Length: 434
Ligand SMILES: O=P(O)(O)OC[C@H]1O[C@H](O)[C@H](O)[C@@H](O)[C@@H]1O
Image (cartoon, rainbow, N blue to C red; front, side, top):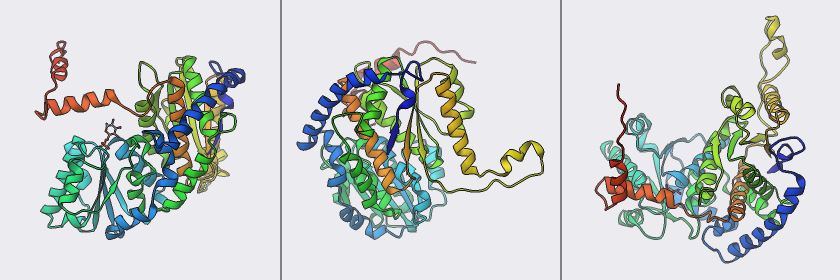
């Protein structure tokens, strides 16, 4: 992963950060790096995630998925960190996979769940259930629904299911009871930092992706972590995003110029929001997509409040396709171009348009979208986020605000006492009806 923070510097963008201020911040980056390295050395909660490239075991994962390796379709059941890493990998690498159809069930919208299951060849479909805690209501409910669908179709789901969960919990009990192949979410690895463990790699393995290359790309990024943001792309990104936020740039629009990376922006949004949104601090992630959002969100980022960092992700190499010639004069400028050239021109024009308007933007560059580069991108953003957590002085590895809603949901379903949820429900006094 390469990072170009040029357009976030004050010389071209306002509000931006000056090189001087980044140099001053670098001392804090050095201290944060020391803290991160100490955490990694002791496999401390959260920091342990940055050791996954050397700890994950591709052979163990491949042998767990072996019974369903030839599946025509794969249903992954999980939510948040237990779905987005796997979805990012299989969506990004779809063109390189073995053609396995992938379905992700995270939401519990009944109509949507039913539509996703329709038409799947269940006898040839594998089930990948993922929950770190093993208690998440959405995941367990969807698993029960999928099991029943298999049973109704006369397919033995126990022959087609792989479970990835923590050491104990209801999902672990269920896996033991039915003797299902199961993998562990490694200790000390929060869900949103677990893409490079079995949590993200089971789906990648079923789809035939190169796990070693994913981990090697991540390891290369790990090897580049150093005590200076000027020498480490991941820290350059995390420190600059933090520094911009200190100057009022409270929104971070992640805008890959590759359709294959649309899900990556969703993964990034969870990582950035859940890790840094603490103690009234943090930077709001927005999911954007180039070129599509040039025709919607860009107006706001160039002319709205000066509070948004746009993070571009660009792949240097892409497949290309010529634009056919036409005899319409006004369209002749397209005739000699390819779709790839048009994409590149649109990217360059958007980057220039933000810079010209003094709006900070950062460019992340991949050589191409493949296993190695993707592993590096995921690891790099995780490291950037851990660094930002140190700079904000927040615990990047918990999510107490999300836990509140989880408990409230159980309370409202009668699965536990949770008086606060009732109090909130009672406060809904203003209704406007047609
Ligand atoms: O993996 P699970 O325990 O099922 O958790 C799934 C998700 O649940 C919560 O919403 C947490 O805030 C997320 O960080 C987590 O990724």
